[in-house]
Image 1 (cartoon, rainbow, N blue to C red):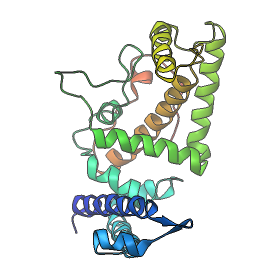
Image 2: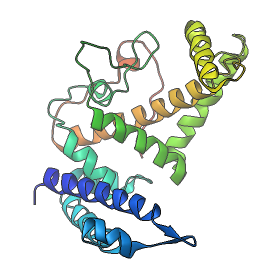
Image 3: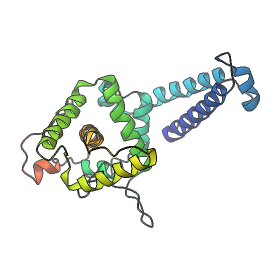
Image 4: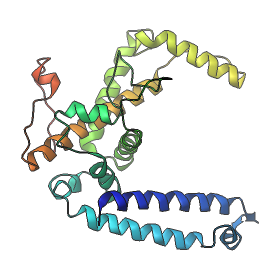
Length: 250
């Protein structure tokens, strides 16, 4: 069965199941969810939808096992299960990604002038929104699953940025400090509170998570290209910037 069809159907069923459960939660009596009442809205029970979702998840697991990249790399990455692996495999055309940075750009993880790319009115986006969402989920899953290989990268980068902030009035991104002050002032105004001093905690977390996922994608890119017999280039930081250290895959 076509992987794109399976993953698309799985996400559709999952979204419908979540909508049904949210509806069921709104029909409470003495703290108990009345699924029977929710059934009247949808014609099927929440329990049945959960079973249907599990069936499609099993179909994903069966399909992804047929992919060489699952057997050759993704299966052994803690935190990457059949669902996330299927998302990656369905989104990426590895023959078109000539460099690891091609994946970073496609997943919205590239940085321009110190900032992640954002939507701008009248301009076409340069990334895939589904890919960007998946990159976020992968980063959060690595932290949740405590994948030491990649969370070590996260915490090392977080520590580096925190130290950097100590020498720039508490801001790890001094070039964005004025923007942070305005953003926090607007947020405080909406909540009728005093504006906070920019601690950059959110920036640091997002930047460290972004680096962690970028390294993972570079490993996926390299393994996949090798499996497909496609040429593999050195990372930009090594080939062009002269960095000596390369983080190897598992």
